[in-house]
Length: 325
Image (cartoon, rainbow, N blue to C red; front, side):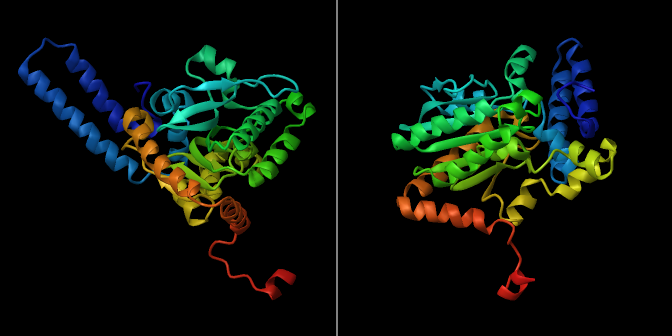
């Protein structure tokens, strides 16, 4: 199977192999027509597959190694990026990137997870697993944004916060909790985009905002499916069942009121057409940021508070009697 395809994309992999074999033949008009026909067939098969993905298949897409990360968004829509390093307490965590940038002529603060590109960079970025100093760096940067009246744009893409003993020793739970509290009160517009994996507290540590957006094939969950399966069934092979039970897909989370909007992706996922995926994010982000920025400070903070207080109540009709039981 070609490395760019996932296990459920076997029909696409077969067609890609046919194209590869034809590409080795002498150049003829008939060969070119056949290749073009196969490419159209791939588009059709891919569109059909992606119309009915299971939750576990969406997990696989969200984790695709070629899925666009923070660096692709910075290169394409956030010029003049100036990175901010360090938490001024312990170290500079490379799994979280922060810095000022321009966005459509406006200065903004970028905060986001970075899983890395090649093997060397992935190790440098700790595969997107942030340590406590990363969340403290993020909060330091966001407080600067508040001071200078700059909107904050947060990109969430992490399997989870780093679970190592040194992370616990330096207070990762406290760092995430402080971020949750302080982001709720930051007096500046905050827009969050779940662009890949939104894993556990590692995601929540930078995911409190006025609007929470989610790309179509990304995931957002209290725990990865493998971890859930290991805890509930004591069998990580139950990850498929766990993915279904966790309700971690964008449509599930929109219905539950946990996110505010789904950002469409190209058929086959953002990794199949990075330019189109980034352009769509840009269009939605521009609109949502303008809507949030138009609110007064008091109104924005009140709406942010109400939004998170309402999570978990979607579709439920509580009464005072119910609450007292």
